[in-house]
Image (cartoon, rainbow, N blue to C red; front, side):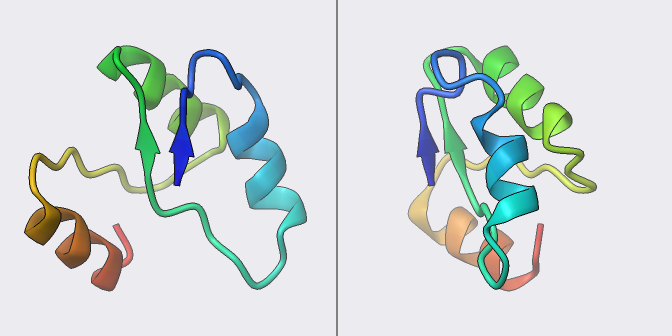
Length: 64
């Protein structure tokens, strides 16, 4: 999980490219737009917005 996507700009992309065998499953930010930008910068194919633990668990299991 990446917390503070606006402050850590570019980290999601670096993580996706360099952390072989691991995947970024969640980004949290006070501003939804900054979280989306971090995922877009990391070239994410699917993005799910969740509001509960159940939803995030399901999204992770379904590779979203």
